[in-house]
Amino acid sequence: MKRFFPMVAIVLLISASQSIAAQAAYKLGAVDLQRAVKECREGIAARSDLQKKAEQFNAELKVLQVDYQRMGAELEKDGGKLSGERRTEKETALQKKGRELQNRQREAQEEIKQMDSDLLKRLVSRLGVIMVKIGDEGKFTAILDRNNGLLYAGKEIDITSLLIQRADDEFTRLRGKNEAR
Image (cartoon, rainbow, N blue to C red; front, side):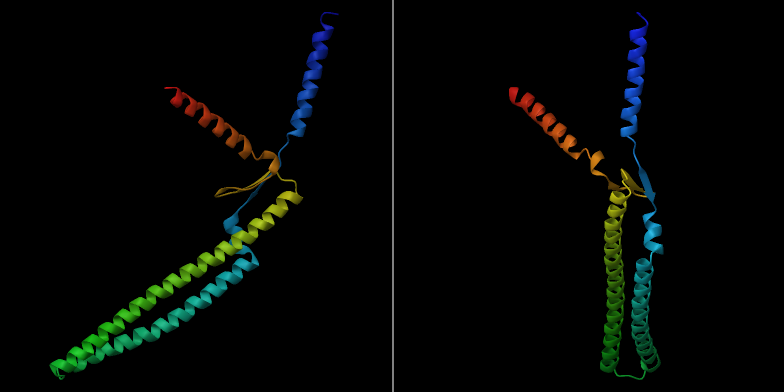
């Protein structure tokens, strides 16, 4: 009889721990967000739009570059024949055209970069909303990005409130020690 109670207690403890472990099962998912952005139709369309815009800028810049080179060739060819004042005018016009070309190149690069950033933000945001739906529907505990970490976490594993409470407790404790001094 003395051995019976400890054995029953052990059996109950094991079955209780298995029940708790079964309830604490986690369902994790993983995604490659970079691949999703690259391969989804919206991402492909965005890259295509970006490429078209870059080609438009390149055509515009090509016209400016040809004009700049033409002006430079004319100045080099006719420079010796021109009066000092006329030569200075042409040099000034060439410098102005060079600055215009550089400014337009910089503006085009910045515009393409901003457009790329905006498209990426919008797409990642939409994918995030879809991921939340997948997480909720599939009853995932968390969804991780293969490259960047956590993308979705179910409410049941969110310990933010616990973190805030502990941080507040620690702050209060440390503040109390400092004030006691």
